[in-house]
Amino acid sequence: MEQKAVKLRWPVVALLAIIAATALRPGDAAWFFDLPRLMDFALRFNSTPSRVLRISLPFTPSPYALAGTRRTRYGPFPVWVDQVFLAFTRDPITMTCIRAVIFSTLTAIGLLWLSRVMRVTPWLAVIAMLSPWMWYYSRELGDNGWNIPFTAISLAAYGSFLNRPRAWPICLIVVCATFGLMSHLMSAALFFPLALHLLIFETRWFWKIKWPLLAVTALMVIVAWPYIHYLLHPHGGKNPEELSAWRGWIFPLLGAQHITAGDMGYILQETWRKIHPAPLRYVWLIARFVTFIGFIACWIGMVLAIPLGRRALRRVADAGPVGHLCLIAWATFICQTLLYGIKRVYEHPHYQSGTWIVYVLFAWLALDTVPRRLGNRNMISRLILPVYASSLLVVTLLLAYQIHRNGGTRDDHFSACLSNQLQVAREIERFSDASPIEMQVPYWIERPLSPHALEALVGPAAGDRPTRRLVVRFRNAFPDDARIVVEDYPLEPNHGDDSLRQ
Image (cartoon, rainbow, N blue to C red; front, side, top):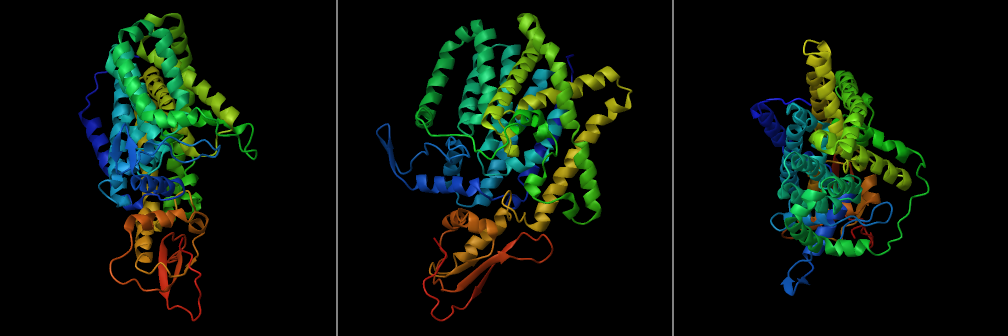
């Protein structure tokens, strides 16, 4: 790929604006399913004293996190993040705001760095950050999403190492790989090919940097040892029988999802016909369809990457960083296909977070090569990036607007917005623990930890707490209103001790 002298000033300004935007209205973030469970882990471990290396601590570093659908527990890194947050604030909205800035900044650095390594326009990094998935995952106090910045920085760091071999990029990758794998093991599909490439193609440099690499690796092993110890023991994981035997084999072909508006129904739990006001439905439909440029570019890039990767195999020294990154990207695709096919992994969009960056590489390869071959005067060359960027921005803005308007969703892939659920938890805590609660919100009935974790964060209200009969229901102020309200009524005579508070 040819060298480009592209000024960074305006792309950096745009990235800073996007980072700031992710921190706007943090109360509109999601609060559902795994997020309360992670916070519950953090609350419990922070209140449990421990003794580490003969040092008494008032808390316990979590050794692991949640058990997944295949009974394997995830790593503790996301719980550690919540534990750190709890050290200075118990407000989940503040946590969300801080996390959004950290997450977006790290992801933007990784993308911008990768664009420099690949010698493509840095505006591609800006376009990727406009994705609705980047906005969504940056504001989610979850686990799997942390692999998005860790993998982006790792691939960029390895490309930088290939361009100019030094110890610190590889040491940085070891740190990112440790925390990435301790967020979700599916990122192994990327980190395994990276390590294999270093050992096979960069053996000479591997031995030259062995001492700093060994020191950082030893430190990360110490940090991760409780989780490593857990993984070394059988845990009885198996594939759920009800899952499809073939969908996992094709799921990696949709790896560019995070730079498109694909599978938006997973967040909204609604069809495009429910977007309000009505004229915006067609804007949403058209813009979302245009974002599928990301899928097409990825598939074209996978084809373009084949000769580059083949050259890296045959002429190691002459292939250049991009050729070797293409080889790694294809190896990652193969590893992911085997892993997801055998383990039947395809159910959720966040299962792409561990490898998403290689599909960004494929897409960027096509978005740089194809317009350049068509010529600067070709209309496709001139319009493809502005149209693609505009469509991603439109979908992200409409998604944010729809969530803010409705106060979230009524289903449990997003639920009512964090601020609304937090307000309801505060309202419940105004009353005595003996107050019976009639729960009419389905996902709070099925997952009672969602309100309980928030109640633990806010704590009981000061002063007298009256005993009343409480009803928690959807507000229903308009169609698709997802906000929750608490109504209190006098106790009925002889109501008994039938409180639903656990």
